Length: 448
Ligand SMILES: *Cc1c(COP(=O)(O)O)cnc(C)c1O
Image 1: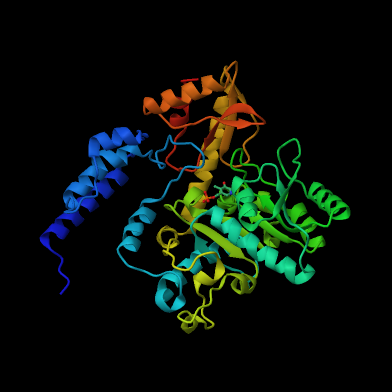
Image 2 (image 1 turned 135 degrees about the vertical axis):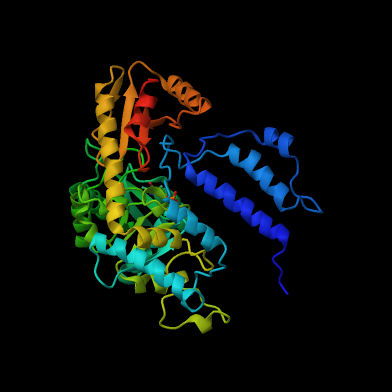
């Protein structure tokens, strides 16, 4: 018989205590250490006899965890950080302890049902038709790739094989689009953005028509970004969708960061045009208060995705029925039910709480922009559309920014690595954490 020994019981209590204490207060910011340094302290942790649960946990909590930056610290405003709700984090413990298989309906029906309801909320916010459906994948990178593979399959059905296939997107599109193109061995047409960094429908139309009239290569997908990672700029979704569909081309929206704000009434209008998307992604692990890792990948017509992604094998044929199996809709088979922490938090708190938390981050972003405008040494780079506030420090070169950022982390005040815009160094706050207060922003700005 499987025994839950006193040692396991004790370890469970220790793990729970550690997890809860981390959730209770602001987590420490912490920071990286070299592998040599870590080895000096912990040595080889993989041994023939094992360290025992207690000691292995100590090694982790006392040393290794402290060599990882907390992405949910309210003054971690780097890249796109994370801010899981307490409920979402706690429920991740349940997911971890439940041996749920999220690949098929047969094995994971209840969990998949819940994930699908959470996805349905996003589908309804976007205004896609009833036919739409989706799946939680590991991240935006896999989400974009999975959608683009379906887009190419559709283009092949319509046009046969082109000499080269091409994805059209803006110069400001996320690096994962180029990565997807590399994996798929297709080309990328980078279309110029306007002076505000926004991709416009007319420019997309012109660029595609020019390419098609001068080469035998064919654009099979247009990717619009709704919320660029660096500056939070939303492309002209309406115009780009029309440009794509007028030419029979798949319209994909990469909203890994920004589409989360679909639930915020104050900015919802900026996403007009999303309802025409053939597919879109949004990462709940970025700005929808869910832990890593979860990207919601949504298709207007999921059957098209199933035709491409469903895996066939003698031992899988038993699963080929009319039920909704998540493994059919992306590049994966076995999957963690990674949408469940998001579902639990959404189900428990209700969608109004999401709208409120989202509006809170937008307000802090606006207040932060005002503090930057009022700061004698700083210049706001552009008006924040969502929750990214980007600016420059007068008289500084790249090395000054880096030094300042390193010191900020060293002093455990915040984590704000420098970025760049058109080759010029910049600083940026990505505010996705409802616990980030304007006083946190002031504390950072005082050091500039
Ligand atoms: C973060 C991001 C991605 C990639 O998502 P991952 O979850 O990191 O793989 C794609 N597109 C945009 C716009 C992003 O901000």
